[in-house]
Length: 334
Image 1 (cartoon, helix red, strand yellow):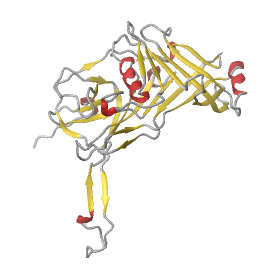
Image 2: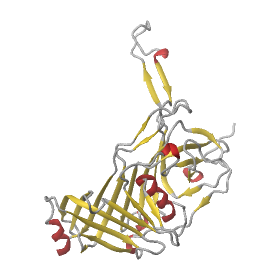
Image 3: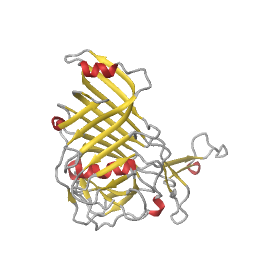
Image 4: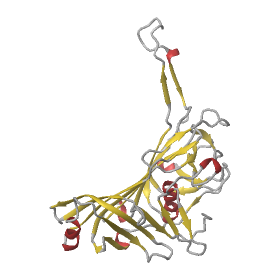
């Protein structure tokens, strides 16, 4: 019998913004191929064990156990480079709130929504995700996918000095195990964010020298709710009760960072800015976090540093906890 050996290098992780809630993008559509270093699918298999004692044996009886995918939310966790074209989609998928300029380079402004979209009316952002295999009709498909956790990291000497991303992407319903993508799938241009190309990094107006950067945008309590009466076994929609943003920045210990360190243990919040590009042109990526310090610890090492930990907070009538600007030169119609 012939034996076929496949590896991760034979697999593509692909996505496409989904037009209609509950309807996966067609197998013949052109999907976007992501550059990932790892991917893991959790099918969210449900185990149901009946509490019965009348089976006549003292071990688990076959009639007392059931496995199914009713109400399942399968998810894929991916890691890899943060490319500007793919990052635009991931930011929308986690914030569920964006405005896009009408002219090139189509600057996109993301904030954390005060409410949430009605997915059942095909509002907001959701996608079809595919794990494409080399053998026909063995690819996996998950649809109605959003992003509940997006972590961005960057430091010199790590990840090829590029901004790295980890995304948790849950969907709705069972995983399709026999998907057969046949479209002209596209790997978008290699456009990265290098640590050495950071043009602005500051806290409360103090210019700082970054060493390690981590930003996490999340929906910590997102769940599937309701019953989809038109699709047996599925929940109806996503409920997003809360958004959050947290950041950890290790910076060079100098007079500027020590001035900020003195604010720990207070209720003061202030803006932190991380930026690539000039703020408006293609290639711009700018994070503004209104952060309250939850920690600012000194570290004595080969190079002395301060590790700042902050939580994004909303200021009533004032600053938002998070604003992200991204220009990618693509008109998404968002």
